Length: 450
Ligand code: UD1
Ligand code: MG
Image (tube, rainbow, N blue to C red; front, side, top):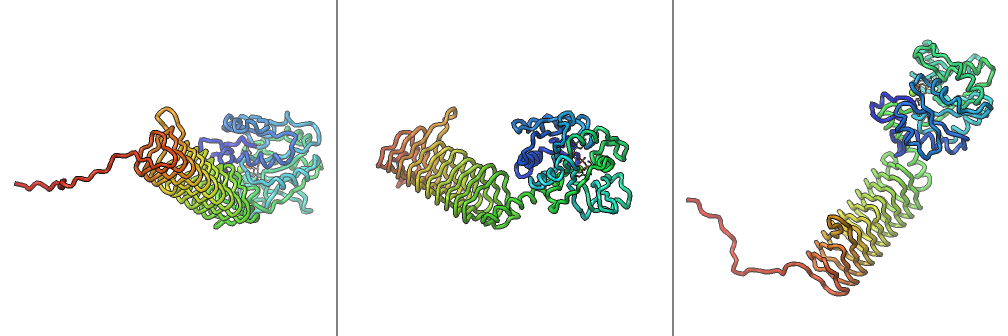
């Protein structure tokens, strides 16, 4: 169910498309459902239906629109024509309850088994607002009463309905078709089917979930941030259980997938996005942002480094304050220091660019030393060109390499040179004005007034 408005988000965007751990809320729910091997997945859309449906393209889920939104029972009424007339199990999940675990959903579906009505419930210290599970003296479930319709005595019930249930398809169709909206909110309550099942002597089972995080909903930015932290803690815990050392699991953010080798250390405040792989013994300093990257064994990424779409070779040292942009490929033992930017360039084994430099569209050989303040002028205003720096080249400080240009193996480029033509291998090439000194020159002195 993903048709609701999400008024309290105070956002122009549909609630279920707000992101948790980098993925839309609805995507979390679909991912949990995907592992269950459902014959079909149907998303009920309404508010922001165009955007929600666009986000689902390629997911294999079918969409059904609910216009207008007259309650959870009315939402399910929209999908009845798509449901089979048999004892299949229909699992109903909420698009804004993202952290339900696959195992919990599987257990609930199994409890239904196509014959019983299975409700996921939880005991809350503060059950206000939720539908209460009303039981008979023998403990059997009699029904759900919504908070707004509950008597003061019923409001004291701590066990609440989480919004997640599994029902037999044929019976669900019968019950939902018969729903009425004679209640406090003039809505069609899906929860009214519980009393119908009881009346038909269909067994109703209530499965209690222990971890409230699984059933917390997102209604406001506050709750979204709270769930984000819980989600991040879950991810941090599973990484630590696998041996990754996080300096502080409360200051760790993973918005995608992170694969780690053995003895990986991650300092505080790092953000990992997309698909990131860290090899054995990798160390990540504080406050790095790393997206879609491979960092090989033994590499050290110093604090405040930004890496995107790049690979770092074994034993390389990067940062602090380095920026590796898409297509940066650093070989083994490469050193990239502070305020160095590298884009679409390969650096051979042992190459070094330690300070304040730019390498764009460059092929850099092994053991090259690239001086402070040097840059590749790779863009002529219309096209990008390559710079080739062969093995063992030494580029002095503050050089401009005007691409396309090649520096031959073992060449040395004098500091401050602008190099627009090939530099021969093994030679010193200098391209700057000759230094002059004027022995007779005197400093101007200030003119005397009056
Ligand atoms: C619902 C339950 C309540 C339960 C609570 C758990 C009903 C009547 N009540 O209440 O017992 O304790 O969830 O969080 O079901 N939706 C639609 N179309 C609609 C209305 C809602 O698709 O017309 C979707 C919403 O987008 C949301 C879900 O259904 O994903 C739940 O709707 P919501 O309005 O939050 O129900 P509650 O009043 O919280
Ligand atoms: Mg709700």
